[in-house]
Image (tube, rainbow, N blue to C red; front, side, top):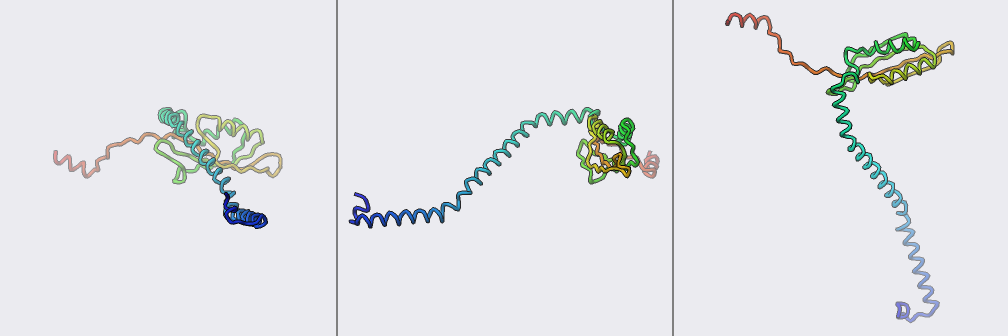
Length: 201
């Protein structure tokens, strides 16, 4: 015997109670369940994002041995980076001359606090103003980037020259160089101290 049978209701009354129950169920779903429909999709997106981030972290962690090996190579092999003896400006001048890039101004920028440095490497910047054809500029940039001196372009501004036949602009290049190991030289004895030591002897 069902709950409705215990109430001794007529068929019309039973149908009315069932209809009221269905309406209440629909209203409750509309008020409390429907507003949360979008949360499931948002939760799935967050799970996917976390999974992607975790995969990237695991991928980078797996590369740690290769990074350490590369670091050792860079520390021991000075040909991979510019040393202080290999001037950035001289390298750029050579490439510009060989590709027909007419440089009208060289602006060496001293290494300063804004340049990124670490225990083993530092950076040197050089800004040039140039005039050239399109092919000459492309060839110059390709050869600069293809060298083993780790020169890269940080900023470039290009526009047509007044004759509208060539390009002119400015390029700022950054070169990494290998720092020389610091040498701890003994401090020189001041003249007064040296004289005092001679008297004691």
